[in-house]
Image (cartoon, rainbow, N blue to C red):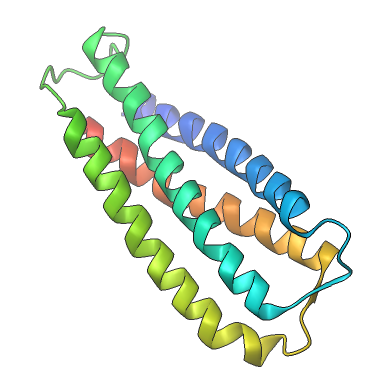
Length: 149
């Protein structure tokens, strides 16, 4: 069991690092040069970030795990079940759509009350990096466990 936990933790750490870096990069691309970012812009920007972090945080580790199972690279994993590619894609897309709707709705309702004047670029950078990391940390282990069961 320790090998399974180590595998999930390792893959999750990689996913968190990549998605945090991508979140930071997209904040720079979208908002570089702005001192204060309006809450409406932040809410709109949460949609593509949430969708892509969830999709990639689910899909890439699941595909890598599926491949490792198929080539018997996970010696501690005994199942030889065929993992249908469509199921991986379907799960990832459904999770990404669901979380995107939830996050955008929460942002739309909460941000104008919490930050009526907008957010500074540096605060947004920190928040989006943290959000990307936490989102990846939540969805990646879920996706890997679905493949390993």
